[in-house]
Image (tube, rainbow over all chains, first blue to last red; front, side, top):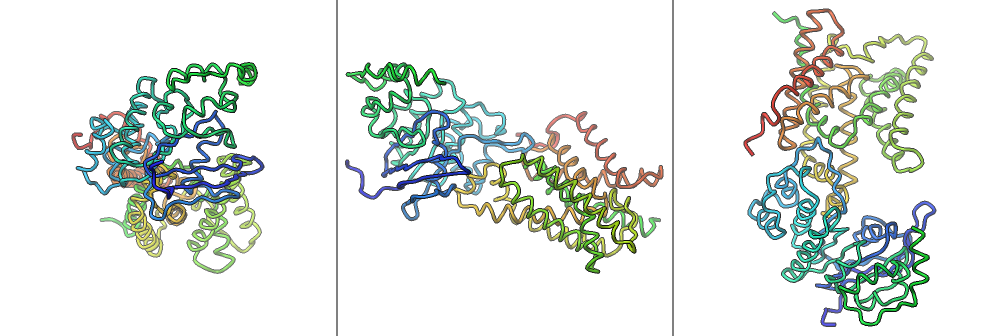
Length: 253
Length: 267
């Protein structure tokens, strides 16, 4: 590891209980400078909740969250519920975070490939355009850590590949760390350094190659999904002996 | 030319319409119409409180509205009942409690219709003071928190991550809404306060390309409705508050005949 020792953000032994529901159990997460860490898991696994805990938006029941002092974070929320009655152009949406600095706004929108929508109303954007604008907003404060909650949501498959490539490119150019959440498996695998597989607790974590070989991972996602992923991670020795158990678990959906 | 009481009515109405534009825009953007309604329904309780404590009735109304705003804020954190159900319970509970409390106070006689639908023609100089000083102060505060409030309206978590003191701004905004609801009540009455907040703002939406323009247009439309409503009420001897709201509704309807984005600067 050539990364500096000090993690930017560390979540340690976090439990979260809301009402009577256990949402997170003994979750650890550590992200260093320049690293891309992807949290994957099925719906309802607590991915967004974990992000909210990491950002300090949700207090954990037990456990600690440590952020490097003065860490600048860019956050891209999962959805933007904007009331249709609010007249808001992309330019104005960006300006809320950077004081009407038009040069900066244009540069950021160009960086994410959304320069053409600068005068459009936010509500009229397509799924992909909106995600790009949200990404640009997250970049406004020159973040050392980008936190992206389902960054490819509402985008078609072709656009998803492009968006993941964009995120990799931004990381490479800016050197910022990226913590992102995803529930689709294969596209994300090509664009991440570390994977954390969450289902309320951490099932497994590590590099994409090691995680896809982990029985807990196969158990969680089913063999069909894992097999289709092999294309992306070039896995040589697939463990077919897990298929029986995952056939059962996936039929529960 | 203009009788004194008519001038006061016009000034009071215009003052309230000016305040209602920006606040009403936020009420529409944040879907708080029912919240405002609930606050205004508690006004009679405030009147009773005013009589009980021998204070200015407007002070009584403001105090009750503020208390209810706090209560509503905390009640929305529970998850057992949907928020519109909670608001409905508070609105009708407060209205009925106010009526019952006043009925117990045998020596108090109030003009119920004036509280329900407003009595703009009876506006006093002290009412004007409340509208222009109290309402004006509320408007200045709103302008002061405008940008962070807008950021919170767009996405609360995003605003929080960007370092905006979300809770403090939200509290201030709810307090200001409670204040202006109490102040506006004199003109259109407790049952119609929300109408004057949301109808001009909803009308302005079609013609605005950014939030500030929408707020300003809403104020102008509100003023227009007040003028037309006062005139109509004088002309046909109809109740003034409801006539103002009818005028606002007519403008809202006519708004659909005008081209969209009429006041948009060629974007």
